[in-house]
Image: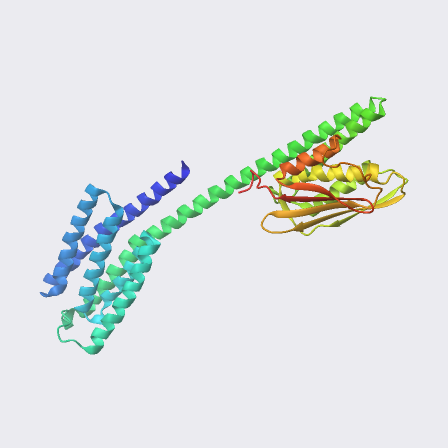
Length: 402
């Protein structure tokens, strides 16, 4: 509902501005017309143009009160203002007339209405000013200066006061009010964004704490059972929980609340796995080849769990009979949001007859499920030594993204 309200407020502001401009310009036109007739003793075209503008503009306002069409009123106002200004300019000195500055106000009023109107007025008035100059330059006989010599200074004064009042008292004041409204609106939006960011940061912090609590409970449960197989299962679950907790911790401590710096995350995760899964009598290195990449939380969580499974399998089973080993993780960005992730090790690898796709082990099934969650595919590439996983996936837009 906010967008319609904003649009309605914008229309109301334009309506108030245009009505104010019409009323003030009409009253001032009547006053200047009377001054021209009875003080400057001008009996030609100029005073009658002021009177006609006064009457026609009031009729324009009355028509708007019936049809409520803002665009129609704006067009009528602009046409009346443009024609009246051009005629008065031609009959009060042409290119040297002080009244020519009113044409600049018409351009400004056009841009306040709409950008399209503003551009139309701009090019039309530039063309008109050039034509007025050419008319003066050619010196057509039918164009005369109706302002008496004795009143030209006062007419210039009236024209300048008329321009300045419309510019400052109507258009300028409206621009200033609009600026203040935008400033207050921006301040409210920034405050709202800060509050939401703090709330979201607190959510990530609490989720991280809750996941760590779950991890601690799993750890206690593993200690209270003598069954080694159950301990291994609980430890695997604990590592999966920690993999998710790390993501929420990174979102909490960093500025970006919707994107994960993937390289830093993988480095923290693999170092944690090496500390908790690797035997102390072995030396396994992890080599990362990951460019600066930001991934959404909806991508980072399943991807982190997938890396957790593959790296854990490599550490636990790939180097059983080896004292040293190396695990390599490479990320390559292809096109749009497509990525290729390769996880390889130089360990013992799988038996040649091992059916990777139809395996019933929990870890392998979980890897396939996570790949589908990433809207991607995973395969084990043939190799003479070790194991190579190739995952093709795409970054999934997070629900927290702006």
